[in-house]
Image (tube, rainbow, N blue to C red):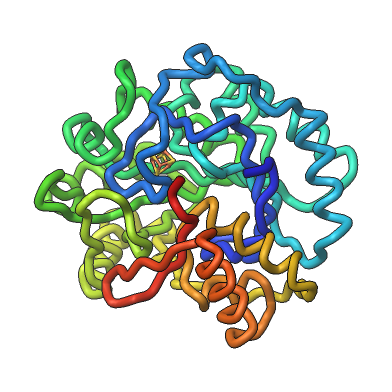
Length: 319
Ligand code: SF4
């Protein structure tokens, strides 16, 4: 997979041009709901990574080429196949991109490295940061996010709170239950999350649940439960907008050539499994046409079908 993927329809950011600034599937966490599969490696920081990271010049050059091909991009988003703040030159990459576009830059991060000054400064230089906050107590944090050794949720929350004073923060809370790993929707866990949000004071909170198939046995919570938790949070935190992440957004992107569409499908699926509807929205191509390309890619063993909660998803074939 390359440095750039998409544009993809983000349920939070509209049409998002994704940047994957790390050399392979590496992350400081191993969340039970992660969609990136078991090929990812857990590290404590960039010092544990031996491969070279994409440089700011390489990232900027690929973003520039992608912007020449696609219009109607709402955000340029650092995210991708792991934790983007592992790239030690993230701040420089943001600076380089700003030299040729006014499109806002977002950072999706698991928050773990924001305690490091250089990562904090890189995050503060973005237009919007979407940090993960799935637990307000260390026990739930360890069960759900399964961090590398040495991470403390209290210290991370303090760093996110500091960041919220200098850049807009949309806090991302993934709510789930699992027989194997437990839940972060018990009364105690939700109270911990609410207290964390009160301390962080984000500009917005986005509640989410796993709508795409993770590798681990994890269940989404129902729409009714999401509504109840939102009400509880709104009552406790009346000054903070609490949103439930919408299921999907519309795309205006128009990609027409077959090879280009197939390549785009592969690059989107390399990041996460998608339904035909997700891909239709992303590519701006009608469902019948997307279905035709999906069938050809499946015939060529480049992608595979997976059914999760009664919905058909497509994913990249495993090696
Ligand atoms: S932080 Fe994101 S990439 Fe890392 S393990 Fe969790 S869900 Fe996967």
